[in-house]
Image 1 (cartoon, chains in turn red, orange):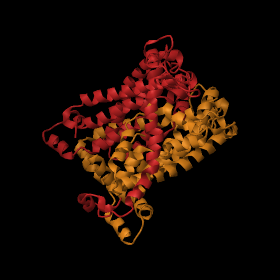
Image 2 (cartoon, chains in turn green, yellow):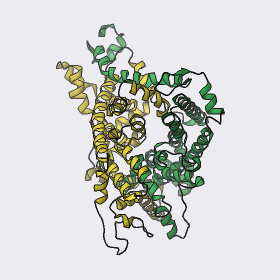
Image 3 (cartoon, chains in turn orange, brown):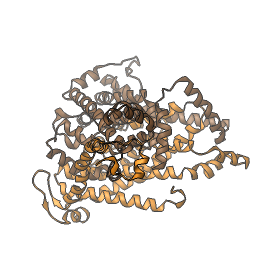
Image 4 (cartoon, chains in turn blue, cyan):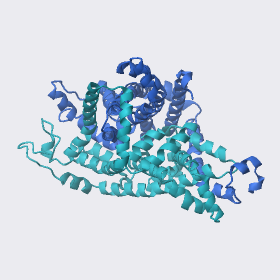
Length: 309
Length: 318
């Protein structure tokens, strides 16, 4: 395989092509491709296969057809908590995604408004994002402590009664959503980049027309940020559907009070890695994958044509 | 795609310039028209400062509370009135102590976990940087049969959510004899599709002429990669290094499913074990948390401009 074997067009566009380049290129990409084959492509096929088997990862897998899907989805005796975990995750998504988008947008908008201190505010709001899940869980467990935690003590100062936030089923997911809002630094950064990308001519024109700040926000800023909002909704949804580490630390690997902290992936983890039902856990993974695909596809469908660029 | 090209072209190089005084001044000067553009009147400015400052305080309070608790004597932890400083609950005098850190690091496994975490990131991050850069360079700079298909395969793997492949990935790692070992943490993470993509976009922006000069001198591809392309790609390599370090230092899920032997635990796992074992001793748990987050926070504070600009420009999830 030499350079002259290529079409003339590619030969001229690549002035730097030389003998032996093809071999070198294969050597350069070989580790990446081999790794992708072993740790991505083979698992992708295996994931589907194992979901049709009864398997504990130790003894050989036994083909059972659709039994796992049937048990997970419809047999409440075998997996009594599956739909509970779907509920918990849905509630978490519904609360946490808007909470972090809203917090992220408000902080970004205000940072874009003030004249000074941008780098300090960016830093402060992003710090929670780089913090390890294990540490986030540890700190919030202590912040939410019913007796001595800062949250309840702060509420006490303004005369409100505290709660056992992580011990009461109805407050667990809202408490998780508050943590998500606290970690909304990524939304803030991307919204901020979006705000800075809005050409000032729009604002100048609106000023000539006598529009106020609120009108500008409503008529110019928000509509022009729709692609950004869309991007953050899709990525936020995908990661919220997979929430695991935080609940695992907060509830020490248990489902939380009355299963109120049993997110989908925690349920999957417990089924596979605690109870050894890897076949069923594989079926759950595949269902999650399909759900994510479908939700993303629907979102793209709902996305108005005008900003597909 | 086109969009990302220009973004990386324009922004990554700037992201690495040291935040010198001159640059800051320029930046704040250009703030003025932007704010005028937003038409923010003085009153709104004041409101914005007040809300932002309160918000920043709220964002930082958990860290302050964590650090304060980690320096408190046990009897000063459980108090009716919260204190964001390690004060004596009776007298209100300064009562900070290092005992909690001594105790946590003396606890079985916590020091070992720290060493394990250091080993993992110091082998994994440079290794993955090199392998990702090699592939990215070939995809960007060398024309070879099948290049576009192979690159599409890499891109396609970015679309698959991590949890979907978790179980077979664990199985393969065990089958390769790397179960319950640090190599089981390192090897399966040596290639990151997103980093290959990011580095390729950056290599595309380096002028070809620089390489052609080296080729005329008879340098090999490997030599050009190593001595010409890599040094020029430092800004992108820095972003990949820092984000990879933070990600793998913090990662809980993968070590959790791979490791069972406590002697192999990484810091997040050891911290999780500390949390579940000592819920009633927050001063110890917070000391452990401080140990686990300090390296990342230090790196983040040092490289904040590079990290924040890099993330904002690439849309990388933190």
